[in-house]
Amino acid sequence: MRDSKDDLLVEYYASHRASVIINYNEIAQSREIGRVFAEYKDKLVVIDGENKKEFVYLIPKTKVYRYGDNQVYLNMSENSLKEFEI
Figure (cartoon, rainbow, N blue to C red):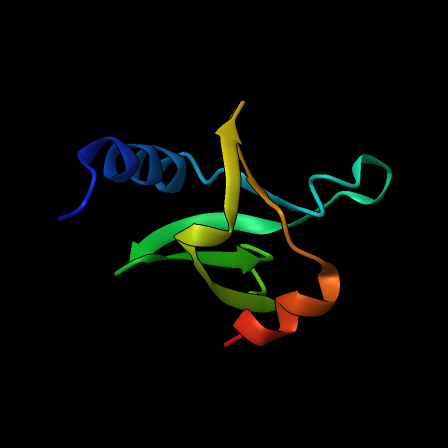
């Protein structure tokens, strides 16, 4: 069973094209990797470059560290990001 609160959060962040930030625990090296565009099953669809769509990622919601301030924070490294690129 899905948690409706989590569903509402994802829907909100997708509709507002929230920024996605990686390396959240390493503040000095945090960087934006794109924006949330949708939810697909238990994953977030993140697109880098709204017009050119340079990279598209399908990132499991389990990788989300926290939601806040129209941003989604992921606790993952840049190296592990390639594993979610589509």
